[in-house]
Length: 144
Image (cartoon, rainbow, N blue to C red):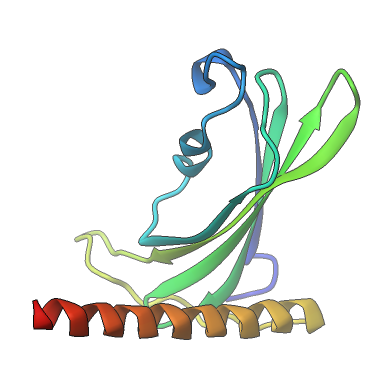
């Protein structure tokens, strides 16, 4: 995966239809902006309120044969107060599909700097943990 193709940002205004009666945005609202295989460690650090701007900062941390881990940092801006805060973080595992909706190969990620290499190594560790959990689940499922 070429440098520059591994990061993306998107900003969305939080509107009343995305919130509960207290004016806090539903966590599910944030999750609906991606198509994914699995989600790890969704951390809701602070509430997001109606009228705030939410920016999703996404970075491909790791690529496998047909899947990739995408780390997402959510930064929220209160326009009236002119304040910015880190409100959410999570890791998504996404699978590439072709026109027939079959898994497709993804270009290998080439970490470019120390930060990219750190993210890559940590993503590898999370992948190993997920694989171990899946193995344990299959063993338990087989015993049932």
